[in-house]
Length: 113
Image (cartoon, rainbow, N blue to C red; front, side, top):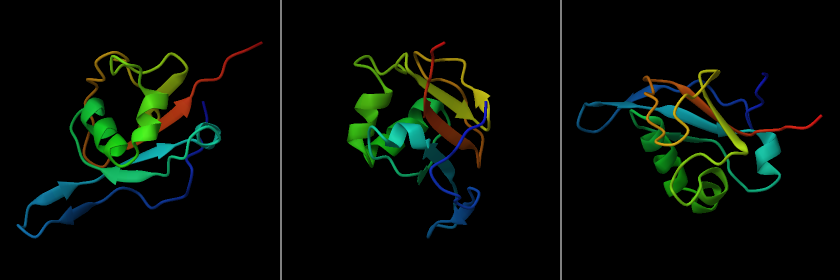
């Protein structure tokens, strides 16, 4: 499946924080077909699981959260999430590990015949 992120942002990077610790940056991109329904620009966040990464992204855009996750916090049936081009395996708890510098793509799942 070919994914189309909303922009051509540079790859995620690590940056030194004022305390000299390394801050991991993970890019979360929402595909164009999803943006027709809800504004959701790409963001850079940190986290070690998909849930942490998505919650950090949704802290900047609460409206997108309601479109992507259901009332239990699980991925909605009509959504798909890919980490570095690979579909996630845990759609309920969102426990998939996220490596340093990963790219997370959130897409509206399309179906039909």
